[in-house]
Image: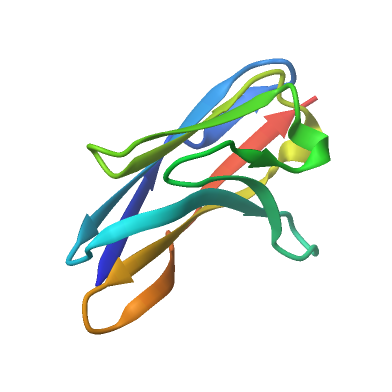
Length: 120
């Protein structure tokens, strides 16, 4: 199986930056998509950004130009650099990974979530 450990959340003021990290470990053959989702209070979980093992990342419109997703395949780690943060970015951010597990196939795994709070 796959374990995900997130770090990097916190409380910042509007206009400041944060960098989230998510490291995957466990018994898997490969990782395809890695990404970040977020869930604000009273709202559904939404996609923030995803990045395939090879190819271009994808962003939700509200973070384009401010957030950058990247990954280090050697470390099985995905990052989310968040610049020019806004109060509406306040949410719990969840790491999401699609991994191929031998004898189990492709499965989706979620991190425990990390709180990002942006004050105005």
